Every structure is written in structure tokens, then in C-alpha cells.
Image (cartoon, rainbow, N blue to C red; front, side):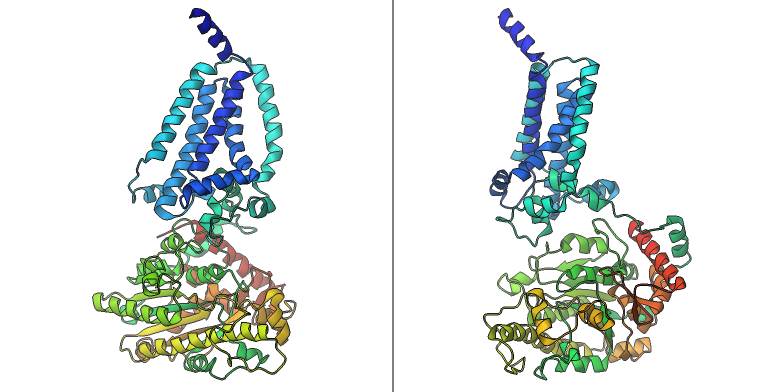
Length: 606
């Protein structure tokens, strides 16, 4: 027996066996992390990781590196194992909880939001399930095993050399956690997920790898020549101005998916019915061009620019200053609808961070109205009215509603015209596939406009004062390589003002019923200037005669001079003229604005 003890003791002190056992234990930690990396279709997703060597290697390298580094620094296997297990598995379990409660993974930026994380944790009841208990048991078992079986002592000099060698190997490998092609293409694992879901796309790559990749996204570098003190001084020179009680009209905003008025291009002959109702609404209201940053996709850029007044958007992973919060602080109930999935663009979490009291998605509302399918506008618009009327019947609070449609989302079928034909006049020059695509798009537009007629009629007859804001988020996809735009001869040359506007501009409409016109003393009619979505709420407040938040007041002067600051092209509309070179005084205003909006994004005031 003593002989066996001596042999085991000698083996446990073997200078090669100890790091080998430690490395195996570290790989076990990495596998536990992968087990907690995903919620949906759990076992199948876990097994899918092993089909892509990049995913396995990139998720197992971090615990292996950290464990060996700590061992060479401390000379104690069980300590290095314990610290690594606590850090890696602890973070992985936190990620597991966050996925469970919010369908939102832990990203590096979340580590910088300790206060918000504490507030979130307080809202949920943590639990221990079989997986978590088993993981804790395995970690404890591994620690005990290493304490007795991996006890090799090593002098400081060899450990220092090994530390330096490890760092020399690891430092060049850091590029693996910043490489875009590797992240998007080589670690693609889409067989079991919906690739449109940011959460599922993240978890499809494991946890440690996408977590480390997210470090670069957390940087959110300030704009050039940013001076926080100066930005704070500018912002503090204004104060939020309350909306007068007798002017707190209800506000309803609708962002229309891929909606634009193609009749203004003069490029094709359409049935007069396609835009008839829309043109009637424009004649009744105040309308203009909304110059977005996006084309054929990227809806939330326009959406969140409108809701915040920011031209440069952050991640919105924590509570953020916004116009929604301004309305909320003014006593408004803030809610809205999007008849698509709550996880799409992570709206379920981000809308809460922007200040919405309630938001209605497919999962919690619209699915029940449409056989668990995404609802079109003829379901959505009446429900917006119904939610409004329910609010008015139960509360005296003013109402702010922001809604995002899904109808009109591309791509558009080229094989069959689902709504029939005749929306586009066939001049004999189009193929059947081209006609099908255009009829599907413009048929959807006419269907939306018909639904809008009934929607506006409801508020036109209301004695409650209501202002409605409506705008398109971006131009539609029209065939690969913009084939339909090219076919119709629509100029998309971004080096010219015409091409730039054709590419990025949609339409906005600000409309008020008679009760709102009387309450606010404005006709709400006319032609507006070309503006970016970050200035649209400012335009609404001007028509209402409201001064608004301190942030809104700080950007007033800039809107009058530089109405568009394209984040896609770095071009500007200065007094309505496209340019890449601003006058010195306007350039200074833009720099001030960039500093103020960055400061506002980073300093939440509630």
C-alpha cells in the first residue's frame, strides 16, 4: 500500500503530467461553457458545434490559455483550474440565465453595465436545474482531483519562460477573435437556427468565441475631437421644456416597411389606384423627403434614429435617453406594435431600453390574430386603433404609439403575382418575372394605402386630438443588383444629388386631425425640407409648437443648416445641396452635434 502511495505521489508530481491533466481539465471547462451557450434546440445545437472545427477550437482555446497561464504564474494547478472554472463557467451560466429570461446573450459590453445588470437580476428569480447542479459537481470533482493528482512543483525560472512562450504564441492568435470573415463565414452554423435572429446567430457559434469577438463592438469609440466636458456644457445650457397640459395631444407614428412613392420617379406607368389614397393624405398634411442611411434593408437604423434623434447609433443594450423617454416623463403612455417576431433586431429588449411601457409582437399579441403568422396591415392598423381606444377608455394619460409594419418586406416573388396584376401597366417591354415582382410590390403598396385610408378616417372623425407621423424606412429591394431600378432607368448614381436622393430618400408625412389642429394652433399642411430620420421628431415638435427635450433643442440650429448627415456616404445636405465639404461654421455645428449625441448616448438621465 505504501509503495502504491509513493508511486501515485511521484506521478502526481510529474512536471509533464500536471500540465497535461490541467489542459484536459481546461478543455472540460470549455465544453461546459458550450453546454450553456444555447437555449433553443439545446442538445442538437450543442452537437452541431462539433461539426465545425473552427467553433470548437475558438471556444476551447480561451479556457486552455487562461488555465495554463495561471498555472505558470502561480505554480498551483488547482488554483489555476478553480479561477478559470469560476470565470468561464460562471460567465456561461450568467449567459444561460440571460438567454432564459430575456432571449439575449451576454456580450462584452454587458460587463461594463454592472448597475444595469444588477437591476435586471433583481427582476428575475434565479434557479438551479440539473445542468447547473451537474456542472458545479463536475467542477468540484475536477478541482479535488487536480489537488491530489496534479501537484508538480516547478521553479520560477522555467515557469517564467513558459509564461513568455505562451504569451508569444497567444498574442498573434488574438486576430482570430477579430477576423470578420472567420466570424461570418467560417464559423457559420445555420442549419438549426433562424439566421435573422441576432441571438440565434450569436449562440450558433458557442459562447466564449462570440463573447470575445464582441469586445470590438463594445468599444463604441467617440467621434474625432470629442470633448466630454464641452459636450456636457453644451447640453446643460438647455433644459427639458414640458409640453403644456392643454397641448398634450396623442401621437401615433407608423414606420412603413420598404415604402416609397415611385410615382415621383416618372419611370413606369402605374395604376392610378396604387398611390391615390397616399397622395390624398399628403395633400392634407405636411410632407417631405426622409433621407435615410440605408437601402433595401437595415430597418432599425431609420427606426432608432427617429426614436432617439441620434444619427450614430449605439447598441442600446442598456437604458438609453430617447424621445420615447421624454414622452414618458411628460406623462404619456408609451407603447407600440410590430406584427413580426420579438427577437427580430432584438426589439423585445431594446424597445424596453428605449422606454416603451408595452410592445406588441407576433408572440404576445398578433400571432393569435393570424394563425401564428406575421400579420399584414389590414390586421395591424385596426389593432393599433383598438389599442388606442382601449387606452382612452381606461386612462386619462396622453398616448404615444410607435408602430413598425412588416407588409411589403422583400424579396418579392418573381414566379407568381400573389395579389393579381394590373398594378403596373404592361408596356410590352417587361418579362413575366419582372412584371410579377413589380406587381407583388406595388400590389402590396396599394393594399397598405387602402388600409391607411380606413386608419386615417378613424382619427379624422375623432374628437380626441391626434397627430400621426408616417414614413418609409428605406427603398425596397428590386431584384439582384438593383435590376428593376436599372430596367426603369431610375438614377442611383450616388455622386449626383438626384441619384443620392433616389437611392436613400423615402417620404414622411405629419398629419393632424381637426381636434389636434385646434389644440395646437397649426394647420399641419405644407412641404417640409429634406431631413434625416434623426431630425423627424424635431420637425414634429416644431409643428406642434413644442420646445422639447434639452437634446432636441441642442440640435435645432443644425437641422436648419445641415438637414442630412449620411452615415453611409459621409455626404451632407447643406441648405438642401449635396456636398462632402461643409462651410466652416456648419462643420463646427456637426462636430458639436456628434459630441453631444455621443455624450447623451453614454450618460443616461432617465
